Amino acid sequence: MDRRDFVRTSTVGLTAAAATAGLAPHPAAATGPVAPAIRRNRAATPIVISDLSGIRYKNGGPESAVERAFRGITEGEDVLDALVAGVNIPERDPTEMGIGYGGLPNADGVVQLDSCCMHGPRRWAGGVAALEGIETPSLVAKAVAELTDHHLLVGAGAQAFARALGFEIEDDLNTEDSRRLWLEWRRRVDPGHWLDPEERLRGQGRAGEETDPDRIKPPGSGSSTGADPDAPRRIRDFADASLEAGLSMVDDGLIPEGSFWGTINCDGINAAGDVCGVTTTSGLSWKIPGRTGDSPILGAGLYVDNDVGAVGSTGRGEANLYNLSSFLAVELMRQGMGPLDAGMATLERIRGNTVEARLLNARGLPNFDVRFFLLAKSGETAGVALYGSGETHYAVCTENGAEERPFEGLLEGSPRD
Ligand code: GLY
Image (cartoon, rainbow, N blue to C red; front, side, top):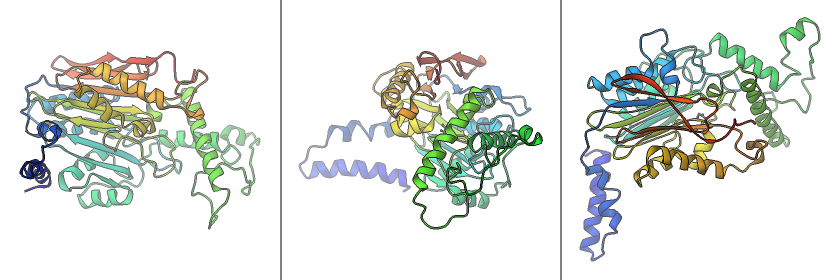
């Protein structure tokens, strides 16, 4: 008996035991948690949805992620296998700066990747976080689900797991572009020490002292040992300066907003009504090493329920971690909302829970964006964003081919108006 059968049998057993003991089983025991596992699947119309990375990046090949995934799904491939094969295309594409190879690195200049996947009919999931050296974290996440009873492997352990399976480990997943942008961020966040090359050539660099107590450095860098009573202030200053410098690069058009919190989420359903999803990302650009966002966390950056549908997200991961937004949206669909209403209600939850001054713009609204890709079991889709002004469309692939459909935005204007 495997772990999942055990859980199911145990739950049924508890209900029977309660009846024997003269206790009335709670109604949910008969109709709630157990019922979905034995409900029969309904036939459906195959469809794949994703953010625009799923239609724009082909890595020089003939198909985008949604096209590859849709082809697999309609040719009888397992839905999750097809979706993961789809997102492997932008993961390997060096021009996609939000995921996989060429994803924008952390504060130390190292690309650290997060991913998770969820298999609706099999009711399992796998994830990896802060994984270095592997272009396709989604494949490692799937292996975690397929080969272990764990959900999430992180950092060096995740890499060792992948190495044992024969994944190729690269020394560095940066491209020339991601390295150049990281250097630009270093200059913006720490101008006294990372000189503008043109100023330097003109001999006008603003070199500061290594001992400068106000120097902005990523936590953990430098040679000091032991407790630094000033560490909390330094970390806070670093976090604020890092975010400000990063957002200034978005505002200056150096990084698309979609790549700053770059992620791809891709969800699909086959003709038998099997629903699966995958999310993969290099996470927040210039993050503190080890920072993990919503993408590998079930319920935050992805959630799938084979009886209801799938929801995944891109954008500021912390907002989804605080609100378990993907799970919330799936639950709202379970309670009868269509994907559009469920997405809007989830965005409204995020808006209402965003109260810290540093996260608010001059209008008192969130200064970041979050997007959801919602796929109902019926095949109905929606793409929603806090602001519909950035990325204005999401991608869908059906038997009619790949197309872009417009987002619905909750708020007017843009995050930093
Ligand atoms: N949504 C991607 C991240 O925040 O890491």
